[in-house]
Amino acid sequence: MVKDYTNLKRGMLAIGAILLIVGIILLIYGFMNFGGLFGQSTDTQQAILQKSNTGFNSIMIMAAGGFMLVIGIGLIYWSQFRRVASYVATEASPALTTASNAIGKGLKESDAMGNKSEKEVIKIKCRHCGYLESEDAEFCSKCGKKV
Image 1 (cartoon, rainbow, N blue to C red):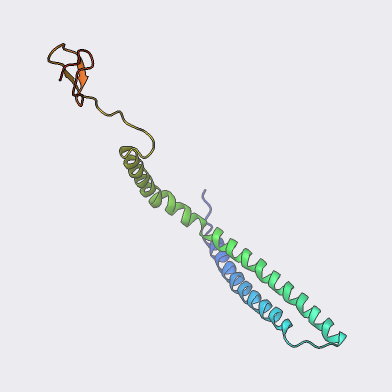
Image 2 (tube, rainbow, N blue to C red; image 1 turned 180 degrees about the vertical axis):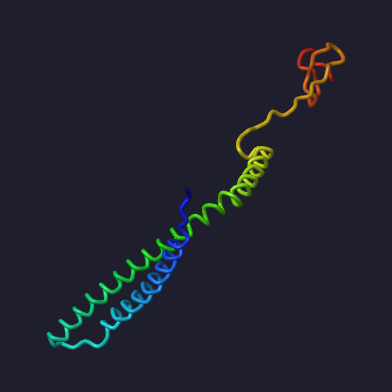
């Protein structure tokens, strides 16, 4: 019996999207509050204490936003995982296999992989002594006469 997880995946996608949006909003709000700390400075101790509390609150808001952002991305990823995995297995994998085979064949033919193929050596027979000499030789290496 195969269980149907469509409703669960839809829920994960919806919750993930909401967490993603709320996390981005909290990050932006925290950065804006944190940036506001560096405005005009007053020397009263109460103002300094208020700014330190605001700074701590801004950092906590940014941390909560980052946490929600990560959880939202994770939920979206896991809700879509089967679709991506099945696409890779059915459509992308054969194309990647064909492409890698073609690249490998091209590299092998071009000797780029270090597989130096032996060059075909053509020998010619000396007219005077019958010794087999390479085709680019001008004189026979056995009898010394012109080939």
